[in-house]
Amino acid sequence: MLDLACGTGAVAKEASQFVGPSGLLVGIDFARGPLAIARSENPACNFAEMDAEHIGLRARFDVVLCQYALMFFPEPEKVLVALRALLKRGGRLAVAVHGPAEGVPYFSTIMEPVLKRIPDIRPAGTPNVHRFGRKEDLENVISAAGFSEVAVRNFIFDYQAGSFAQYWSDYMSTTAASIRSKIEARGAQVVEEIRMESEERSRKYADNGSITFPWQVLVATAANR
Image (cartoon, rainbow, N blue to C red; front, top):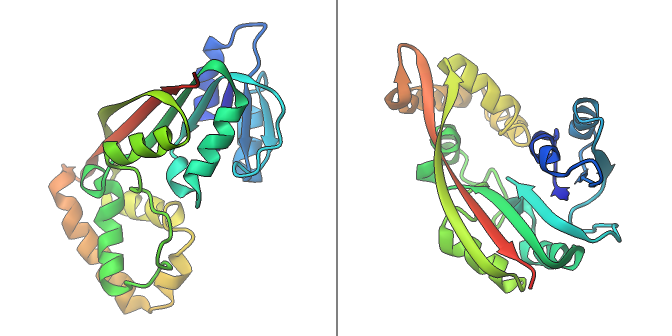
């Protein structure tokens, strides 16, 4: 198995249960910090620092997995073509992506107030988290890469975000980390306006001070025939 953009190894940990004693599971990512966590928590797996758009592997795999990464690649079809070349004939691909903005309010509850005040915070054309949130878009990009038997299933989970203060802190330190400096550069007043509007928008998901967001996920499977 190959776990593409494996991050901290959450998928690899689950997948390792199906590899068997004679199998091999390889996880690749270009971020050293998450890879260090993956290695410490999954000592039986193999992890390598590698760019998913320039995969330096010669092995052929039975299964390729990719969770929450496809939408961020500048050329996702190119990545999928490379993955197909790494799969054995009859091998399987499984990809998970986030749903549309309305299906994953964890992101939009804060990002929409940000974009209202700083519409140019990201360059035009920058890939976003909802890029393949529509079933047909996900199907099309996988089919265009030459895969067959493409099937997409829809799931909705609950995500416990805690209090608004916890949610705000987590979002700003993780999801918004790359643009946080641009938000804060607009001044304390703008940051406070974003925070207040976000808190108001989050109330529809709150109960007794704790926020629970629905989280839509699309999972696509395909074959290399």
